[in-house]
Length: 420
Ligand code: FSA
Image (cartoon, rainbow, N blue to C red; front, top):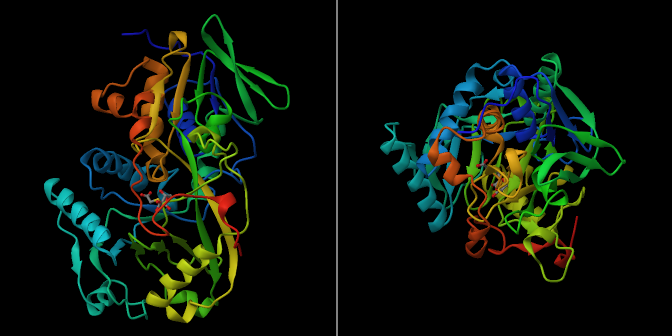
């Protein structure tokens, strides 16, 4: 077993988003004081996937590994003063309008039962949906599913970033602006990173936690595939918004999801798709899909969003979008995270904490526990986690897709001509 990292060691975390800030928080709470986070932007970064008004906080998973991990996070969503104020435990309506999606809901139910949880409340008719979400006015034709009342809902993601960053600073951590573009390596040991601005940051341990931007810093041997999803906001009047207070998250597994209005009276709605890449080389190597920022969405995504409203809240189906955005995630081949020491560098000097795979945010309160364990002890105490999250370029041949909706295939943004 490697020796424990001395308490005064300098730890550099590249990326101040979900994984990076959580790691900084856990390290500082473990007594490490020399913790520096750098991010290309002030927090909350405009390109962090978590810079968003709401994200689903879901504990129910079809697989026991993520289910148990989410239950660990839930404890902190309910009790940690950084996260608790941002968690809204309003429940989730899991719905489906296709056979594959209804299978997914059944899988979740099976896993719940095997973990000793009560089954989801079955939703097989419009009336049953209205009992749990009376705000819905649409016909919900072909909708079925299940309802989970507690241990789930949504969180104000942007405020989590802000509050976590405040806590990091309060505990003595530093958060600096700089766009990392490479590592400083001496004799096989990572000694920090360089930035586009020409600054060199040195540290005993470097953690790369920069989500979809991680591929700009080091070669992940095609394990990371940056993809984006789309969402829009509509604005309600105060009277309209009033009716939706504490509405559960409406999550149709094959079409998309929406939330109760935020404090600005805006409803955020996302359409489900297999995601979009942005390849910059014609060979389409996974690592050449790079995030770009856009305040517009493909027309087909607008149509999909309006379709969800026409089934659930037809009064909003034609309402103007006051915001349209794309949001970047980075998929590993099997959609488990990559939380591991890099095998090619000595002394565990480079730790990777990335590969959110489009389901990372709900784990924000707890993910740093494991990354910090790796930084401090040089290994994870749980063998299952070290297996699941290890460096694994051999898995790139069998990349799973694992999402429903849209055209059924991952499209490249450059092949989309119709935008709104
Ligand atoms: O499990 C979750 O955290 C839901 S994430 C929401 C979402 O838009 C996915 O529906 C999508 O497939 C992609 O993974 C990005 O995130």
